[in-house]
Image (tube, rainbow, N blue to C red):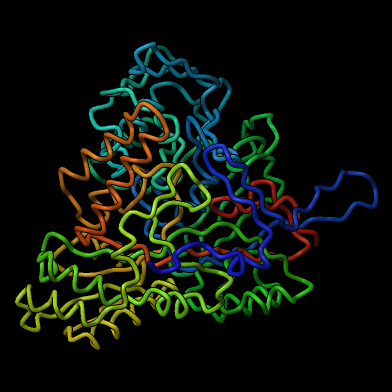
Length: 527
């Protein structure tokens, strides 16, 4: 069997201890300490400038999995529960929760004195409306909390009733991808079914200021923000908003982002893998490495040539994942081979199911499957976007590998918002690549979310339910192994490999944190 583990050598140079689900995750970064207000203390700028890789499709947190959208909207909206640095769900807009003995009812008491950006006090009607909309529109919520109901009990109390007991309800509510941001009831009431919000009003430390198309989004400090008192931790705790304005510039060109960070034009941006060593040696830049996620390929199981299982298996057998990863991330210290879809450091979910179909790099075996499928040269369409360099580079390598194996291949490329929209039409693509962040539990993964790549099968849905209702952690892990094996046997998707993300900041920045995304609500920049 191939060596698919995570070698120590590949992680050299990164001071990380990973842990999710009870294992502490710590990163060593340059975390500035805030200054006091004594005479002689430095003055601070009124803005922080962030360069992001693409213009977000929306800031409607319940309706998108776009990371650039979520890292902005995370400063605007808040949730009932959120994740602390230990990846544990803790109260955010909720004060507390009580769970019924049968595990079917969750009653949340809300914090008082919290106000929306339009001046309205947060009440249970707003939470009930927001959470009901999330249940009806979020692909994860529809899958994991189907037939659940949120209702108002009194002005400061809401109740969630779930269909069957499971161990991950609060984790799902505290999710980051497609997170359930709370907004005023009247905004939701004005929407049609499935319509996205265009008026961005939350309770967060920053309020929406301006969206200048193709240039930037500006957020402004919310002066009446009601912060929690706990120490900042992950996405939870105190949010002081010491900086007046946050600018998120849309900088799709990688070299422009790199040059902007060097010159100080930008204070924060993601560091491309090929520039990691360069910035590591720069005395003016601080690097914040975090566990990134999984670079995965998804196959269209419903329409087109790859609706044929044998042809999907042929395409999967072609993948030389080591070559794809090297082209995508350049620096071997920033990626590693592993067939799993979960964080390898999260041992509860670490399984090697499907490893025999992972990284086969077997064009001869692929040709055998192609013959069994009766392949007649039908075009395989790869959907790509240049807005994410690793996804685009991987798509190009896959295109060439498939061609060399005898497939007719066409690559179509769009900006990221158009890519997301096109992906929803199963008649337009056969394969796409995506870099997706880690999730706390397997049922939250995009690979098992039907709306992500169209995978719908009773084996999958029954397996997810078995995971969530398992009597103990070992039983849940065994059920997940069955699901991951199904994904590979069905050739629905493959992990190409895992990557480590790096955010670069000016070394002088204070109060900055890098968690699942850059956290700016306690950050400030000296003049």
